[in-house]
Length: 488
Image (tube, rainbow, N blue to C red; front, top):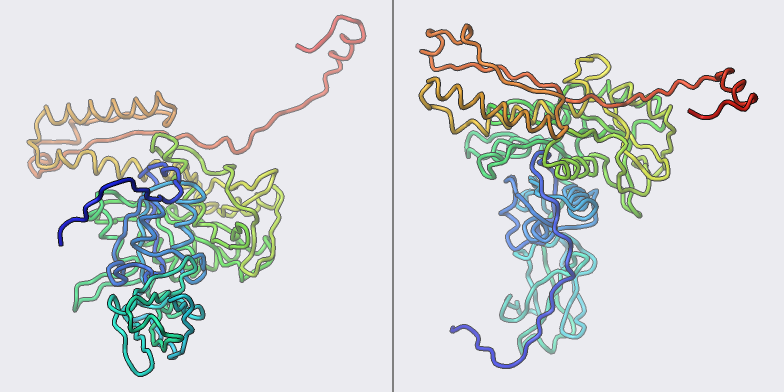
């Protein structure tokens, strides 16, 4: 059929514009969870593969979107990144498989109103499963009817043929996806030796080969409070693709205690103690909707990095976080003052305080207080070391297999010193330099193909404890009474 011919004046309405997200990859999030893929054109295409999304429209098209954040956990991060913070890109890994996690719906008769029947009592319907009957006659999609979803995710059957136009009711059979069937084992995933397919967090390996970007933050809101999932996330933070590293954001289970004093014990029992793990408590709430803290923290981290020239040198504590409440899973509100919040910080837990506005609170990774090494304890220091390691791997990959001559050594030293000096002058590093030691690079060593460089760098520690010493000075009083004094 030839392209449609237009002549005259036309008007096409476009959806309300949303500001373009801030882009930054130093805090690239890789998030594993569930999505309402039945809302997409090809539900099977987004199962256990890394899906790189640049905005909410992209995420809706490829993964679907629902405000049922408990059932569809990836949607928490879609909201946090694309709406609350306006930051991109984000990599999502959906583990909900329509071929596995599904349920049969009871056949039911639905009324037709103005040529449409709305399946308003069932969600998650797969279009491919629909059987529509008018009496005993089975109708055909695209011939007798069209299928679409309304804004609430309900399936809408629009009748288009003369045969169906006069229908008063339709009998509908369907199958729905069932997120309640997804388990922690699905999130953890694995490798199928028979098919060669990866699932869950095993798909993390595919992120760099598919996108060219190294993962920076690993998340699983709605799942990471499960110690088994958290343990796997921690194990995935190093040797990604054999070379890269990342941090993981772990929630603590808010159903296990109502007292902040018991939270450190929950962290200990969960086994969450690692230099790459950032542990947080409690949950958050925006309007009437609860979100796991990690979803918003991840978005805030990536936004902060992107606003800082794509460098993760800033601390994330004391940053305003866009929430209405801090809550437990049952909706109980949590209000902690600084002293209480500091109790959690002392146990390596990030929390929330409200002082005019809600703020993130805590600078320690989960390895604290057992480990006090500066580069492993402080979050920004740890992230800078991880980021620098990943950068060195990607920046100098093109030099691999070059002749190991003086020109190569000089080129790497010059390039890296220039790069490090630029971060120092911008205030993103306290100092940095690269050195090549000839004694360490003996002829025998170079003959094996190995060239060794040393990079020394110092990231800034946080001004976490600012102390003003206030003292009464009697001499100032005496000067004032004599008429000779005043503020200096």
